[in-house]
Image (cartoon, rainbow, N blue to C red; front, side, top):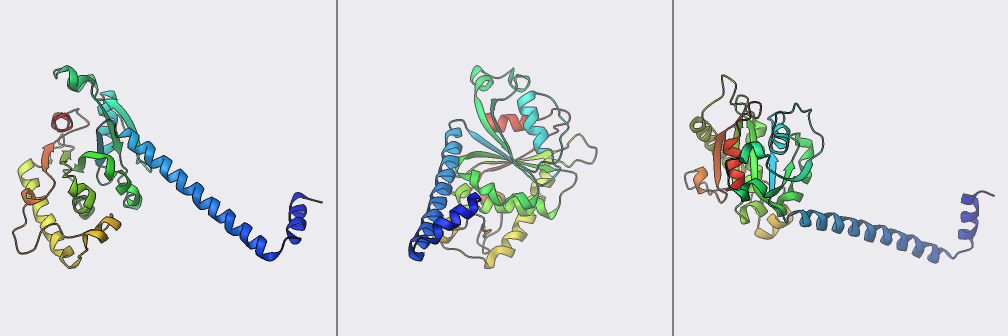
Length: 257
C-alpha cells in the first residue's frame, strides 16, 4: 500500500468534523507561517535602514543600473534590462569623493536600484518606509508619458510626502548632443505635473484611505492655486549627468548633503 493510500485509509476513520478541523488548522498554520515570513522580511529591510537608503528609480533605459554600479565600482558598466531590484550597502567609490572630507569618503549608504518596467512597480511602495532620498533618473533626450506619470506617482505617495523625502531629477545622457539644459526641463516637468494634477483633481481620499492605499495617485495641489514645483511638500532639484562619461558630481553632492 502506498503512502498516499495509507494516509487516506487513516483519514477515513476520522469523523468528518475532526477532518474539517484539521484542514482549518492546517490552513491557519500556513497563514501564520506567511505572516512570520513577511515580518522577517520587513525586519530585515528595517535593519538595513541603519545606513541612509537611496532609492534609484525611473523609466526603462535611463541609466539607473549604470549609476548604481558606477557609484560602487567607479566605472561605467554596460547593463541589461533588469527584472528585479538590486540592493547593496557601500560607500561611494573613492574616485568620486577623493576631494571630500573623511566622513564623505567612508560613509556607507544602502542603495536600491529599481527596475524601470511599469509591471514591476507594485512593490515599489514597500521601500518607502526606509527611503531617505530619491534619485529619479531620466533620459533627457527621450522623455515619454511614463516618466511624468511615475514621477507624479512618487510625489503623491503619502509616506514620501509625510517624510518630505527630497528628490533629485538626474537628466542623464548629457553627453549626447541633443541633451537639454536644466531650466527648460524644469519648466517641462512643471507643465506636465500641472496637467496630471488636473487629471487627478477628481480623485479624493481621506487620510485613512491614503494610508491604506499607498499606490493610489492623488492630487498634489489644489486647482485654485498656480501649480509650481516649489510648492510641493518634497524638495525637488534638477541636475545634468552622464553615467557614460562619469559626470555624476551633482548626484554625488545630493547624496552627501
